[in-house]
Length: 495
Image (cartoon, rainbow, N blue to C red; front, side, top):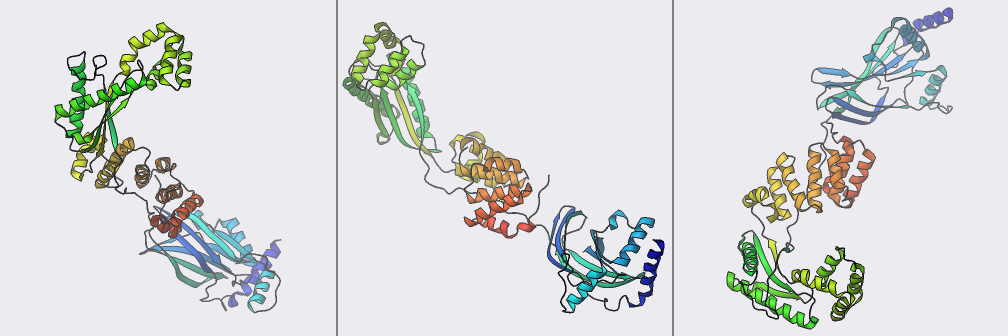
């Protein structure tokens, strides 16, 4: 065995004079599909080293070392080593006996050429017919390396051809540069200002009338107090500069005793009487007032019976649900149990006789100055558009923006805009979990899909991220189109 190794080494030494005859200055290995991305102190490298034209003699070695150069500093990455058979035996012996490599110098990969493969390659390069090659001529060089390099670093490929104890610098040339990672575009939404939907504020008062009468008399029972409730409520709404009152509806309810037609007439007149009283007292614009009436409030009566523990509860509910004619319905209740009817008449029916005041209004658009005050004091008097305007004033990604959007979410929890913007603000602070929580309900909107793509990308779910970007881009989202075009160079966020 030792004699065999000695003979090989001797043969290698005899061939020293011819080692570099054809190698000097040759670009033995080419780089394709290079991608360099910096993430803080880490560098992601992905490239293909193609060596289909490389031919090594038995006693030669080619060391291909990627270098990152910033200014006067150079960082060497793990090399790829190509060896002839004889050189490999010598190298293994040195490594075994002398521990030649330090951990930083350990090869990324070592490729050994056999004699038969060298002859096959020589014939291939000379154009002669050759057997099918037995190896792929590409090395996928990829990994994440921790090197403190700056943006703008240049990547060089150094190729050193060695033989018989000498080194010939075959080629050192630039193959790429390390550009700054590209921040993905995060989508915020600004709502389109449209005609605000009317809102409604309501008040219930119990105005007592003399039997069969519809004249409002403050001195009866608690009428004075109940009327004052209506005055205060209506006046407050009419005088609020932040609101535009569109309509005041005075609605009167009657209880089921007497005939339905009689109660319809009575409740209508009582609604008109209360409305006129309020208009005269407040000196209000009568054109804003309307009246409505509910002759017999069977809904409220049914709800009360259903929540009770009356022995005849189920029979009473059956009568109410299955007797269309209200007069027949009342008579059947009397006949079922007179004592129960008397109890309802004395204790329940009085509360059915009431007056509701519904005020329909819209919130006026707020100026920024007014919105900054309202969001802290009376956010209920703000439109969603005004709340978003205030948040935008604070600045995206700031704690004040998040606070303003939390208020918006409290009043408009099911609107897409605040949900998307809460997610976008979370992404600006690297919180992908919160972002996904707000976006999960809106998988068909392009800006929401783009933000889901950013969250997925930062969570390492790149296939899913690409799909989100692709869907959003097809819908016309420019942010998603940008992210898709720069997908391989988008920055990675790490807490």
